Length: 255
Ligand SMILES: C[S@@+](CC[C@H](N)C(=O)[O-])C[C@H]1O[C@@H](n2cnc3c(N)ncnc32)[C@H](O)[C@@H]1O
Image (cartoon, rainbow, N blue to C red; front, side):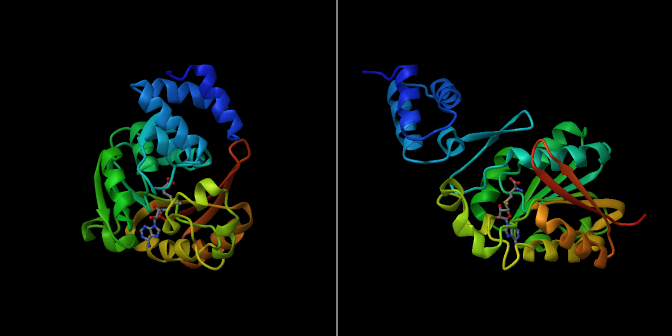
């Protein structure tokens, strides 16, 4: 017998889904057949993150395609895009480094007017996923090595939501992240800032004068990240968004 909406809510609630009603609405709307709905509910009840079951995540009003293992863009990261959108002029060159699904660049492009968007990631699964979402070029490779050399010194906005969980804390993440998202998307090395240090070290060479690097950190990492940016020749600024629980560290290349 086909599952009713109430059946779906009951199954999700029994599996411990806190937002069972909302999730049931989404699953019922997404499934095209009763069999598909039953399979989706089974996967969700078994602990697969909702976004992998749906095949998309909501991010700043966009539907971002999500594929297995690719980092699910977090609601708090919308604050980073909001900061960048205020300062990004139409026609600018925007780079989304460590782009994952490409959500940040896609959202910024939708909000800042036409921009020249480039995105890159080291994980082939993320690159394939980003190619479905990014209205621009997507490259595969290690940080700046992936980018065309012609962008050096011309980037107005450098988005970099890099992995920043300290290695020793990856095991403490919720199972949805720990068991389903690629380790390379989470692990930021001993203090969580190893990838961000490498991004910061290269930023001044890739940014245009007056251009800025936007990174997310935990609250406790922000002061160290700002100090790293300053030692790499960037003017640092820490912005917090209490509602979203976000900490953003911005580093501007002096004009
Ligand atoms: C925390 S996820 C963020 C993804 C995306 N920016 C977002 O906010 O949804 C970090 C991403 O960095 C990528 N990554 C990790 N190390 C990298 C490296 N050395 N070069 C390029 N990308 C890297 C991972 O594959 C992952 O997609």
